[in-house]
Length: 317
Figure 1 (cartoon, rainbow, N blue to C red):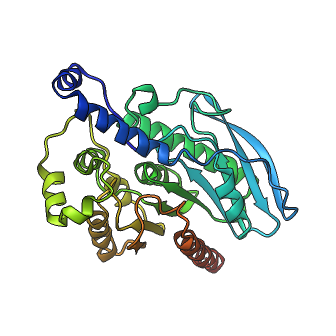
Figure 2: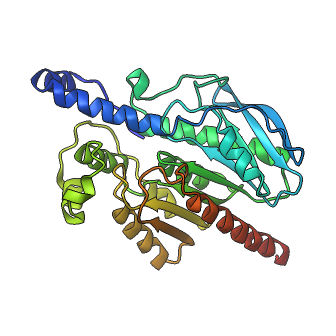
């Protein structure tokens, strides 16, 4: 989700406290690698799922991916990446395709067989500035248009993880083909607020055993920003959306302040937005890929229900 921005001020701080700097860097790299662990897998041998490698052009480069199309499909999804150097998520896509969902998953820009330049901490660049997030949103939208060419008669949504919480609302705001959103461990706070929280937790998995919600919120509100760039606020795009969305959170998350995000979603719900969330008390940031499959199972049930409503609404018009 985040990365370090190398400035003269950073180097000065590193000279004064190299141990802290190294620890922070390791924490950030571990986090962005979290969602890079799903490697491309061989094409499905399931005869009920048609598998096709596809390419599409976005912002001057060719992106490469794979389409998983079950024999009887009731919904279609494009996967939006987290922050790391992520290839297409074939295993995740195949598992959900077995549930009757068409999936398009592609190698992230600059990764695998996709062209372009990857932006992220592994190469010492900032991957959460506005320019990069908007670029990745345009890539996701191009993938949606490609999927629509192949599946014109079923609703298309976006499903994503972590950093996708900033990308999906931007994409959905600009693309009327997107009918629903599924967001695993995704922030509703700004990029700078997320950085403040992440530096505060500093990778400490026992953070919530020693800190209160009030302390975390005070830090997020008042801590000086270590880096200077224009913040991206997903709530700006979310305010414009009327499509259904579901957020799936782990209460022990130390990358995003879950209860603050839930409070912001409750504000949207009170305003009539069709946004929902589910909180898992024993999980952390890795809700989509934990051994406990409950979050994914709930997401699938939610998709089936919402797509049914979307289809009924379309027929009644």
